[in-house]
Image (cartoon, rainbow, N blue to C red; front, top):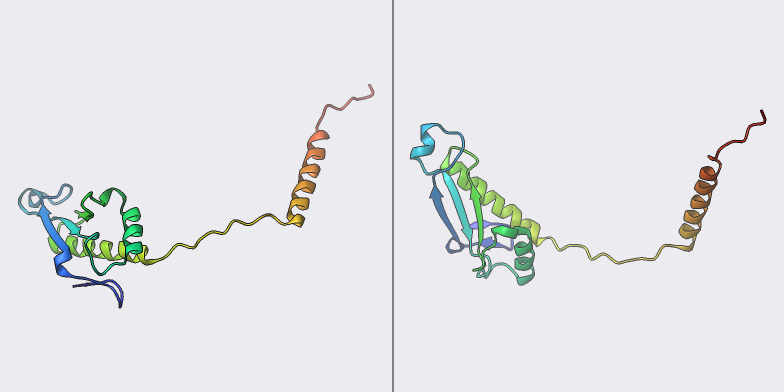
Length: 140
């Protein structure tokens, strides 16, 4: 069981891991040992996540979300299979915690009368400064 918050935890049946050979550093180890981890989380079928959280998670996941409603995280950062598993689980927890935060609804407001007046005054001042930059007729 993977604990996200006090109220939300992910059951073991919702997670599946698949190991493959990783690219990158590791010498001969790369060719012999399957250290890369593909962590699959069945998010759409998860009874522990509320629907709004699932929708936000889907948006955050982007291309990592499959058509079946699963979230797939691929990790091959280290040479250790155990460490890659930990990293994948940490990333999953972090992603779900981000999805738990409900975004603030932005309320559009009108500019105040005073701010409009200040803006117009600043534009006029700037216009006069630019108007003064013209050619100077000298009395030679």
